[in-house]
Every structure is written in structure tokens, then in C-alpha cells.
Amino acid sequence: MPAPTAMPRLSSTDLESLLGVTRHLAMPFELSAMLAEVAAAACRVLRAERASVWLLDVAAQELVLEVSSDIVQVRIPVGHGLVGACATDRQAINVPDCYADPRFDPSVDRQSGFHTRCSLTLPLADLEGGLVGVLQVLNKRGSAFAAGDQALAEALAAQCAVALARARSTARLLEAAKLRQELALARTVQLGSLPRSWPALPGYDMHATFLPAAETGGDTYDLALVDGQLLVVLADATGHGIAPALSVTQMQAMLRMAFRLGAPLERVFREVNDRLCECLPDGHFVTAFVGLLDPDTHRLRFISGGQGSILHYAAADDAFRVHKAGTLPMGLRPVIGELVPVALDLAPGDLLVLVSDGVFEYEDRHGVAFGRGRVEQAVRAGRGDGPAALSRRLGQALQHFAAGAPQEDDITMVVLGRQALA
Image (cartoon, rainbow, N blue to C red; front, side, top):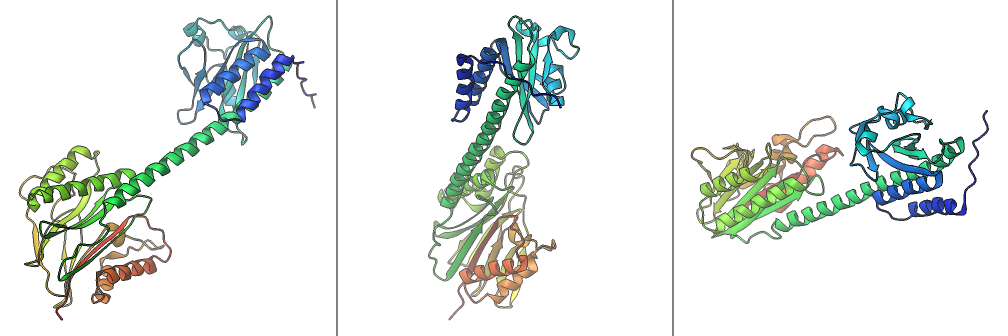
């Protein structure tokens, strides 16, 4: 077994340089400044003309020059040149005459005007042995790098690698914290746009439930009195998270504004749809039920853009009348042709039940979907309990069916019931 290479005797200045780097690595730092300090310390202690730090871009499998005094950022493939060979072999490479080594790539010299005589190239590995970059020291003054220089550089490289790993972990934590803040803000905005109480409408009861699958969801609902009529909305944007949450919030605000300005249902749907076409990314859309109930005539007129099934429970004959979507989802493309709203009359004891795909498509652990039939069973069983109790019953039936299977999609329910005659 070969004897360990002895460290060269260090001057007090050199030792101070190395300890200074180590001390700084244990403190908060800015990555580029820390790497520059490591390179400067390597030059001082090893009596070198230049040192550089290359970071590994894992996705591109390239090494990126991060620290250099006179050259713009350079990228080289792993395996190319001395730096790339070091990254591939994970071994230190000590070359006394670089231009005599076939692995040496002189293109960086040509770009910078620097002439490389000798080099010491070392891999930077984290505590788990994963490569994070390469440290290269060039041109020891007066000679080539000795074995003792390599041992000293390896100690410095080990500290640098630990610092790099810590910097990346810190960056991931900060990014995660930022994302949590953004999600919390989006959730606040989204929940703030939902009604905090239901309108008082003589002869009617109503209830709505929203259970996002993540911190924020792509569903929304609305129950609001607009010019004496009840606005009923249930919408579901593609995807989950911040972007869908903001999409449905934007749509909801546009709907309320348009109806308060007195625009008819058909025009409102068309205008909001066309505005969403302008602002939503390609391939994104919102399925939406938009309806207006006239409490004097008990007639509900609605347009459903991709939203279904719409369940109308008729109490008189204990039956469901099911309505499918009448047009394309909102934001998919501009409306062409005439929009014809569906009209249904709510008799005493009738219920309008709107649920998002997260209810119909909720799967148990065997991949079986909850389906419309089970929704109808729950509604029929709780038809006389009122919308709030009926919503709870439906939610309980869903959880019992799922038997612990995770919620993969947002769940939204809107139940509107006309009170039965005394």
C-alpha cells in the first residue's frame, strides 16, 4: 500500500488563506463569490497563475466555466478535454506539459490568449460521491505541480465540493419556500374570490363545496344575486396549481362584471370565452356551467361549455333529467354561430346538482370511477335533507367509495334546491 502523499509545508499566509476559505464555507454565501474565493486561494497556496471552477450541468451533461478572469462562460461536453476527462474518470489529472497531452483542448487558450503550460485538474464530488464540478489550477510558477501540491489541492477541492452541494441544497430549499409562498398567495386569491355566504333567495336553499387536490385548484364556483337573478357557476380549468387557479378566478371576475353591466347570458358567455382565448396558453381551457335563475318564474337558463353531466332531480316523479354540455369549453376557440341556452323549470322539491370531474372520475384503489350512478344514488337518498346536508352525504359517499385512495382531482359541488310546498 503506497504511503500517503505528504502535504507541503504551509506558510502562515497560506494557512490563513485556506482557513479563511473554510470559515467562509460555513457561513451564508453567494455562490459565485464563494467560487471566486476558492479559485483565488488555490492560486495563492499553489503558486499558480490561474484557477477555474467548472460546474456540472447534469441535464445537458456539460461542464460550465463559472470562475474565470478573462473569458466569457464556456460549456464543454463531459469527456472533452482535460476537464471533461477528469469529470468522466473522477480522478485527479496532473499534467506537466499540457500541449504534449492528447486530451488537452487548446481552444480555450486561443479564446483567452492565455498559454497553459501545466495543469492540475480535480473532480468535485459531494458527500454521496456525486460529481458537482471540476477544479482546475494552471501554471505553477517556476515548475510543474508536485504530488504534495495535488494533496493540498484535493483538500481544497473537497471543501469546495461540500460548499457547492450546500449551495445547491439551499437554492432548492429557497425555491421550495418561494413556491410555497406563491401557492399560499394563489390559494388566498382563489378562496377570496369564492362566496363567503349564500344569497338569501326566498323559496330556495343552496350550498357549494370546494376541495382542491393540491394547495390550489383549477375549479371554482359562484352563487350570487345579479339584478334580481341568481348567477350559478361551476367551472374547471385544465391542470392544477397556480395557473389554473388564476384562470378560473379571472373567468369568475369577468362573468360577474359582465352580468352586473346588464349583458344577456348568451353575450356574456361569448365575450368571456373570447377573452379567455386571448389569454390562456395553447391547449388550456375551462369547462364551465353558467346559468341564471329567475326566482319569479323559477326558470333556469344556462349554457354549459364542456361541463357535464348536469343533474336536474325532479321531485314530482323521483327522476333525474340529465343535460350534457351544449358547446365547447371556454377559451378553446372563439364562439362561432349562435349560442342557444338550455331552459329548465324548477318545481317544488326539485334539485339542481352540479359536480366537477373530480367527483365523477374519483377512482378507488382498483381503478373504478365513482360515476354518475353513485352521485344519483346519494342525491336521491338525501333529497329531503337540504343542499348542505346533501353535499355532506355526497362527500361521505365519495370517501367511503374511495376507501383511502388519494384524491387526484379537485372536487367541487354546487347544489341548488327549490323548497317543497308545506
